[in-house]
Image (cartoon, rainbow, N blue to C red; front, side, top):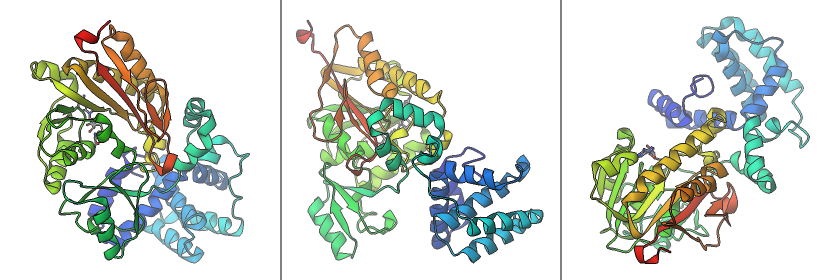
Length: 426
Ligand SMILES: C[S@@+](CC[C@H](N)C(=O)[O-])C[C@H]1O[C@@H](n2cnc3c(N)ncnc32)[C@H](O)[C@@H]1O
């Protein structure tokens, strides 16, 4: 109800559920069930519509949610049939909808008798890919050769990837520590500090978590800090820093870095502070709107700026499947306008010879290459693109794109923009 009907994020809704239900086994069960319903929402919702003789009144939508959960249990979680039927029917009374017992019983039993066919390649794209129609069109238009890979990756359970804190240990030592604790793990391919933890467990249960030996971060996001290529004495700005995944990585690479981490969200700034303290790192942390920084601190300039911009998040659907339900077509141009504004606001703070790294966890061209193209148009030759010559992802006109599922990574985009020194200008 919280995610599908009320439009809240999955993260917030699950936090609310955990606060009410501290039993970890039940919480984990609910979490798994909810994630699967949302990953397979379009398919389950269409099946339910076919099974119901007439739609429910809007005030009884909770029964529709109960049925989605029940169908998901029967078809995808392989919960024993009798348990699904008994528990779903008795939940009607708990939800003050005793009248719905017959309806719920009938729909679940008829599904057991006549299970639906597997989703075939001839099904409508929305059902085949479990994404809304507009999203299927938008992604297919941008990446026609990679649609199968992208939609399949978006619907999978993501890998559990952590970054080892190089200020405290090495990846080899940490892998050994995990092995000694009976936790199976392996080094990832491209990020030099990334570890794929294969044994499912909460992050707090990993050895050394509270002592700051590691942070949770997808491999694609771990590629940002090295791309910034900071010298030890550089003044660096992380302009959209919360919760601090990339800022803490920069500091682990160089604990004395002169780093300023800003974010517009007071709530999310607390997460930066918490992460810095757990990892034993320090930097300047401020609540400032990046678009106002020039006005508020006119004399501050930086050799490096990281702009990990707010975006649609369409590259991280496998981690946040509610994004599929909540994004609308209007969100893309809105995000692009905000991203362009942020680059323009930050550009004057970069010293000549300095570099801005633009990053998004999106795969949409309108938020990536198109934003960079629009920015370059506003510049009178003061900006030049630095090619990213890495062996992950694929080169785009201005940057490098990792698509969801490439080398088992989240979708991410990076572009490096350098400010010409006066003597370099034509
Ligand atoms: C993609 S997240 C950043 C993730 C972060 N770099 C990390 O690695 O953990 C984008 C952040 O931009 C922040 N943000 C959005 N608009 C902003 C603005 N105008 N000024 C500063 N921060 C902003 C959001 O609050 C959000 O925390």
